[in-house]
Structures are given as C-alpha cells and as structure tokens.
Length: 149
Image 1: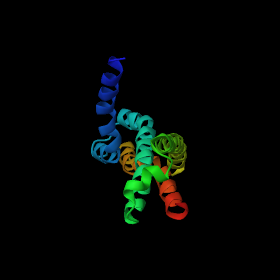
Image 2 (image 1 turned 180 degrees about the vertical axis):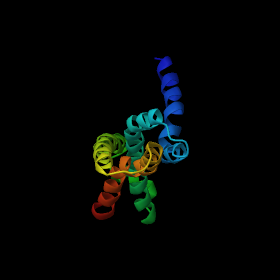
Image 3 (image 1 turned 180 degrees about the horizontal axis):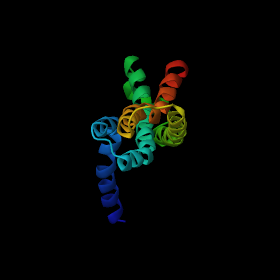
Image 4 (image 1 turned 90 degrees about the vertical axis):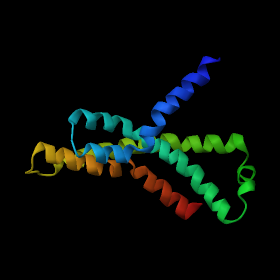
C-alpha cells in the first residue's frame, strides 16, 4: 500500500503539466511540424480536455458561490465531499469522449478541404487549429454552466 501514493504522485507530476499546457504545446510544435508529434497529440488531447472539464466543473461552481458570499457553505450545500468529487469526476469522461468525437470530426473535415499548399503548411495549420477542436467539449460545459447553473 505504500508504493501506491508514490506512483500516483509520480504519474501526476508527469501528466498534469502536459495536460495543462497542451494548447501551447500544439502551437509551439506548429513552428516545426512533425507528423509523429501530431499523432501523439491526437491521442493525448482527450486527456487534456477531460482534465480541463474536471477542473472547470469545480472552479465555476465554487466561483459562483464565492460571488454570492457563501463559499464556505459550497461543499456542504452540494452534498459534502462524497457527492462533489464523484460529480466532478463525472465531467472527466464527458471531456474525454467529447474531445475524441470532436477530434474525429475535425480530422474528417480537415481532410475534405481541397489544399494547394505543401504538406508542411497543412500540418502547421492543423496543429494551430487542433487545440480548438480537441477542447470543444469545454465550450459545451461552459454553455451548460452559463444557462443551467
């Protein structure tokens, strides 16, 4: 049981920074496009979108309660620790599955556009637009929070 927290901490230290800085990584890679890096980003992007959906679901709710001046009551009013954490984790699969679906739609739409430019220019454009497509479920989460919460 002692090894489990160490592995979790190590995994968090390795995965959280790339998930947080994913859009910036895409835009930095656009300067020197690499097809292998783009493929790795395609598979890693849903983790980043799921992470942001989880963080946003908690941050936006706590922020709204802070504006009402009742931040200390926020967790108790939402059922306590055992209710708020699973609810936040419910947003994680929404972010992952939604991101993957948006990525597939983006790739299909990107392939149908007639291009007359070089492969490098197409890949550069793909890397610049890809973070918007992969994080599109966050727009859905933001709209839901805006109108229903």
